[in-house]
Amino acid sequence: MTNALDILTLRAGYGAINVLWDVSLSVETGKTTVIVGPNGAGKTTLLRAIMGLVPATSGDIRVDGQSRKAMKTWDRVADGLVMIPEGRMIFPDMTVEDNLMMGAFPPGCRREWKRNKAMVMDMFPRLAERRGQIAGTLSGGEAQMLAIGRGLMEQPRVCLIDEPSLGLAPVVVDEIFRILARLRAEGLTILLVEQNTSRALKIADHVHLMQSGKVVLSERGDRVDLERLHALYFAHETAA
Image (cartoon, rainbow, N blue to C red):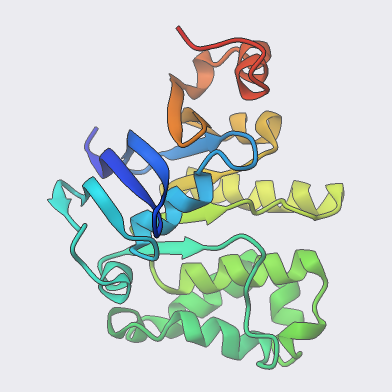
């Protein structure tokens, strides 16, 4: 199996503050790779660095084996890297449908916008019901569905999803993870950051645990010992 995304000894941060310390990991094509870890571990910074929103000071970011470290963020999106950020970050004064159409803005996505919108509406019936509604009036769960739908309108080759269950009611979390499981089954390449480890492991092909800007554990999803993962997560023990 080839890798859709490779992160090689990546360092990145904010100004003089370095956050990522020689992070290396790979995301296999058509698989779901999960990153877990406590607050402040560098998970969101890693996704931002992959997208070029945070400058990488060393190391490399490769898509299908080709370096993308020097590319602008919008060129990475055009190349198939799409990020669904933490906190939804929809356009609150625009309608649901217009939010989705913003996802179809990249030139490579415009030709298939009708098919992609129909796919998103089928995946999220509540968005179809609310297509003319102002996005800022949606519930938290509906806003998260809209953020995911907008990302799918961009026809991602690699989809980076940051904390999709954060702040949502359990019944909505169930629905979000059903959608993630469906996307995984359909072969979308996903890099998922998630603090709900037990839920994330159920859809993970590979798991990476981050602590203090470093990857301290990397295992296949079906081989992860949840108790040991939690012990490392809360720093009750250290990785060998």
